[in-house]
Image (cartoon, rainbow, N blue to C red):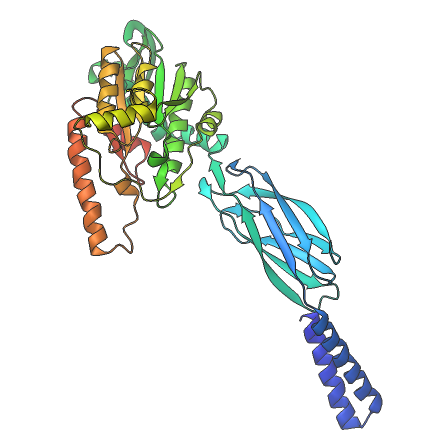
Length: 427
């Protein structure tokens, strides 16, 4: 029972005793308790301002520090408690004593529990020093956090056999490294393996399909060309960017594990934003890319394949600083004979992606396009019939554009429920 309830109950008991026993002393004690309670209640008018600032970036399940500013704007002395209400993070309750006019700066440890762009929320409760009354206050939040996958989650994903097999299929589908006649090892048969490489003696002895693996003549350079433009990062709900961050981290970790040199080129609509040489640490890579979701409706209607008008070309040249677009400039960064994985929405600039594919082809580079279709990432719940019709029209138009782009570059269309093995199955 709360202290206020105890006092009121005691006053009621004393009043009843005074009435039944005719005791003036009990009556005086009851009146005194009620007077004390009334005075305390009238004087309890707290005013507290709580502001919390969180870092822009963090790592899943790794603690980060938040800064909290607390001001007691009233003449009431008491205890302030701050508790986290968001399910996206874990934080222990903070407790601090405040005198009238106090201003304090506190440090809070927050442990993110989810990946992606998260908004956190907390509540503050001010209680008088006697513990009789309390009042809740909102916590003013400054900033949102972008949480990247932890190295542990990336390693766990890499340990899963189906993921490793799928990434091996990516390597084979791109044709990375030609095989020599030098025997390297025996291993279990994986989907996509050449059946002519089956070792039938080892298969009969171990009672499972075994293939012969030969050394590759070279370790090819692998390029990740990633669009970081704001239009590409738009999403109505978290999911698309979170998915892409994990896929990019897995690809980088895998190719580096087997000795390939991984180079990342981040670009936007106008040009190259960042070039990351020898991306060895997947976590550092995704952090440097800064892939954060942007709130807003992504462009569902794809751009056309026709050439812009003379005025349109002039406007684009003034905007970009040259006639070349971001995808084209990124393709020019690729060395001859390399292997390229583009991460982009072909609906934004299909014509520029085709140009980039032509440049890569002339350089003798093999390329695939990882294409997150924004239609797949839009929640269908609560949409009107007209909105569903618009969504379906965008889907049909994007399918037509994708059919034309596929004539120049291999396209892997992905949605929120796709995992890497399904992606590889479409290669």
